[in-house]
Length: 188
Image (cartoon, rainbow, N blue to C red; front, side, top):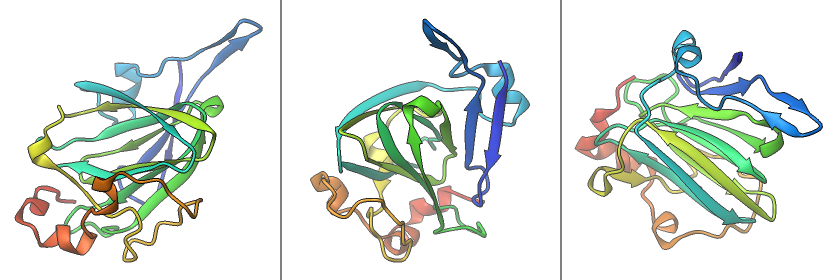
């Protein structure tokens, strides 16, 4: 199966497209194939897989983990969602910049955001299920978040009345994170 890579303005953040075999019965695709990912310089050592289901207007994020550093390969398994990655890496020419795009389950594309990027999404359909492969095991002591609507970042979310968790609505600003010693974990 062929994999296509679309680069973004943020180094290391890419959109992954897959060859899909479809007929009257449905479709088949390889969500992950080690040799194909390696040939495109993508990670091949995923250690955890997560899935979430959310309702329209739910915003989750912007989440990241520094210990151990965690990259995420995200895709919309059902519904439609706006997936986002924000560069947090020190000395990166795109630090504080974001990439976001609407992903629909039927398109079968993925968003890869390496360690050093905060990730999040908002649900645009009635419901959506988001799945993601992670390069690090979840560690609540080594994870944090950036405020979803941090004005310094300026994400253009395609919604106006988000539903947020208490944790996400009180997350720190990017400028606050960059003052913490742990932020030096992420180098460009």
